[in-house]
Length: 174
Image 1 (cartoon, rainbow, N blue to C red):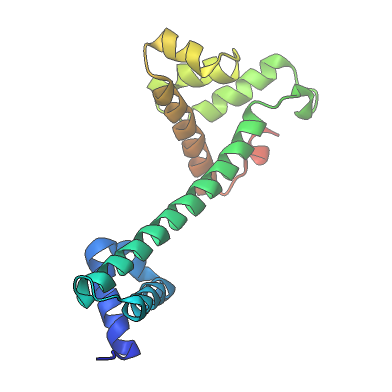
Image 2: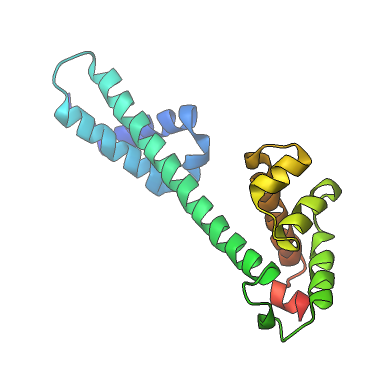
C-alpha cells in the first residue's frame, strides 16, 4: 500500500512531535523526515514491520538534524566568543590604540562587571595573569572543564549584555 505525500508528512510530524518538538518550527525539517520515511518504505526488505522500519529511519534523520542544528549553533557561538576573546585579550596589546596596561585592566574590569562575582577571579587569572586553564583549575580546586565553562559563560554573558544595550565591544572600550 502506497502512502500519499500528505500521509508521510503527517507521520513525520507525529514522530518529530514525539522525539524533538523544537524541529517543528521549520517545515523543511518535516519534509526531510518525511523524505527519509519514503526512502525507508522503498528500501524495506521485509525484516520486521514496515511501520517500525519507517519510524527508525525517521528517528535517524531527526538525530542528524538535531546534531546539525547543535553544531551550527556551537560554531556561531564559537565565532562570537573568539571575537570577544580577541578584544579582551589581544595578542598584541598595542591593538588598543597604544593604551597602557593600566587602561587595559580598567577596560577588562568594566566588562567583567557583567559576569557573576564568583567567576571574576577566574577571568582575571586567565586574561590578565595569562594563567593556563590547568593552573587556574589547580588554584581554584576545580576541574579543567569547569574553568573552561566559566570562561565561555562569562564571554557569552558579556556579549549578551552588550547586545542588549546595542553596543559592540569596540564601542565599549574605545
